[in-house]
Length: 267
Image: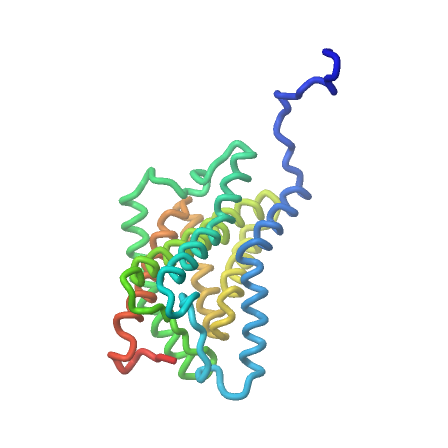
């Protein structure tokens, strides 16, 4: 050893063994930084809504709101920052998978089957989209749901691109973490397939609770369907496509139709 050296450098250390405790703590941290925290936030928001005077349908839950009214360039910067920062947990999941010698391809999030993923996703979106709208309108009419306002952005040139990017971000974040990553980790922790399905579906419903009981139940059912499809196909790719199309339809459709058709509730 040379003078002043503190010891040999270990350049060949093998990866740390993924113990149950490590996997459990990792999963809790990922959820705590992402959709688990969103679930707690949605619960607090829901409690605030049900304890406020008036019915739920007389209150509004706004998505994609302006972050800097009257300052479009600053608003755009905030919108893009919010979209990018929301995807950091997905990058973390990719990093954690690399640690065990895997990648997002393990979850079926890659470009190996683009046309199959697109076709399957479009079919799922068509089925869920039509039933989802009917369920939302019924739940709101019965007083179980807030009026959901999918977008309240200013009428500027970047409005629709930002709405599309927001939809893609939602789809990637939710399907990679709530379906692919969570089911993998729960399986490694010894959870039964049925219990893992319930956990994933309840989590999906929980972070939509800010919309009301209808938002919770509707998304929980969607969660069950998505887990079943993921296990059947072994890929989150079609689910990301389906979710993207659903959100693009909701965000852009609302922007185009709000105030122009009688059946679409507005705040």
